Length: 300
Image 1: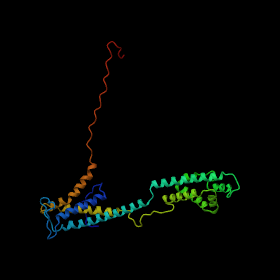
Image 2: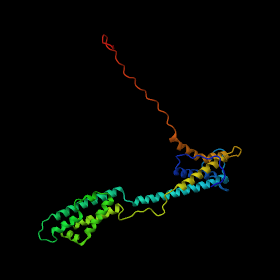
Image 3: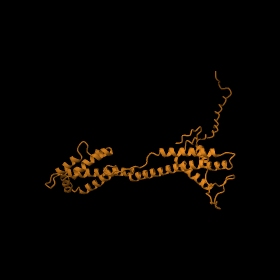
Image 4: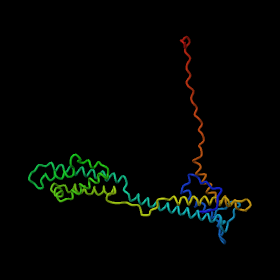
């Protein structure tokens, strides 16, 4: 930062945003390219005509060229940061489950547990007929999965509570005794669908997969934003101070280079301008009270 004392400063528009700064850089860059023609370079037929009093230059005056390059570099760094951050955020949103997917996974899991409970209750309700496995094994499994008074209430809990309850029950179903009940009473198909729904639920809510933003992804752009604003403020001051009525062409050059900034500042000021006061609506006069008929009693 310069140690030269400054007695005046440019107040940038309060509504200025990064996109304004980046767009301003491009506009000013185009104007500099139009007015600066290195030795040997000539204007082409298609080039826009320069304003009256402004001639092409071999190079910008040094006290304008240096702050211009600093501003150009700062705006470019700001643009690069914003691009990296936007890309990282897009990747994160792309990889993260949507609310619609979470809702569908939750509904699918609930439906499979309800169907499984109905199947298990049906098997547990059979009478003992000497077949293997006996219905008492189905009743054992039902007591493991849907004990009173909880029953199926676990599927109505918050996702973390529900997940923990489901994991414990899925482990029970993986055991040899539970697998024998599934096979003996024809519950394998129910079990397979329950496994698939459980896996989808775990992935949707991040219990079995992890979605991380890229390591080192940019998050805080305040340093780049501050640097770009400071560089812009310095550039505007240098261009403004270059204009001198005794230096031929200096006022025309300053006006030409500052035109995009003036236009931008004017655009940003428009929403803040007070809207013209609306003409008050005429208040209708109250209806006239008809006079009492002749001979009627008046007020006392």
